[in-house]
Amino acid sequence: MLATWLILLSALLHASWNLAIRRSRDSVAATVVVVAGSALLAGGVACFQHGAPPALLSATQWGLAAGLFEGIYFFALGRALQIGPLGPVYAVSRGLPLLLLWPVSHAALGEAVSLRSAFSVALLLLGLVALAPSRGPGQGTTRAGYGWACLCAGAIAGNTLLYKVALVRGADVLVLFTVADVTALPVAVLGIGSWAHLWPRIRAAWSELPLALSLAAVASSVSFLLTLYVMRGQGAAWVVTLRNSSIAFAQLLSWIWLGERPSKRVLAGVGLVLAGALLLGF
Image 1 (cartoon, one colour):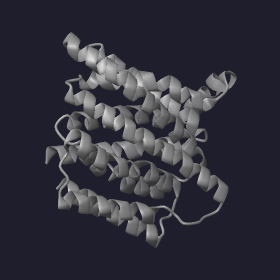
Image 2 (spheres, helix red, strand yellow; image 1 turned 90 degrees about the vertical axis):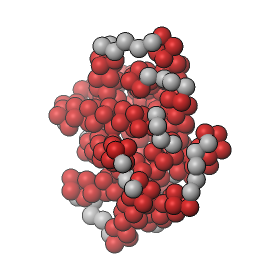
Image 3 (cartoon, rainbow, N blue to C red; image 1 turned 180 degrees about the horizontal axis):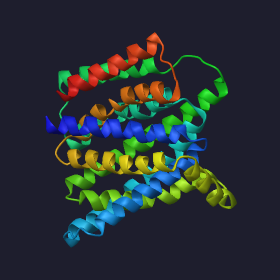
Image 4 (cartoon, rainbow, N blue to C red; image 1 turned 180 degrees about the vertical axis):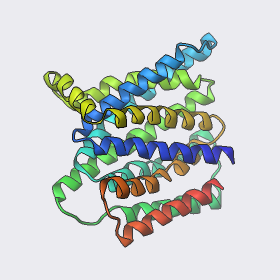
């Protein structure tokens, strides 16, 4: 039960830092600021932790690999949120990894698949279909946003599996996260494109929302660490599926802070996502 509540808290924090990025006029630069802040925070805490050399080595090796996927995720997330609404982009990027993680986790990691878990995933996927609008203004932008969101989804599936394997092999959670975050940072920076624009855009994003991005960096760190902590004793697919309750949180936050008014279809999708997550978790 504690694992369920920790993942739900992680989901809320995850949705909140994505909201902060979406509020920025330059979501790509804001993503870099959040990743850099998260890496500094985790690295600072890790400096005070002394782990056994094998654990540190294992965490470093797997953290480098996971960090590459993490960087692709941050790179694509900044682009997706720059051109697409928070709700649909978030739904696609968080929902599609389920299609890969459940069969792979079952086949490669021995994660059990019960009738209840299968029904929960089905409810979540139905909710995701309802949350994705069939049409809307700016069809080109919407398709592009969905394309970047799909790239996010592939990166999430990849880094989740790497994180799980690392934890099974005894990797230290904090060191694993720190190495992955530091590795992801230069990949996320590539999203800005031109080195000449790097510092001006980062300064502008920071100046626009200093408090929001600071809190987003903390929320990002705590969210990921909670996820890794729970994943040590739980299946990767179970964790990601339950964490997708963040889709409902994202819809609620986007309604409150961004004025993205949900339709009846969206509300139905949020209800299905919550039902699936609660059925799976409790």
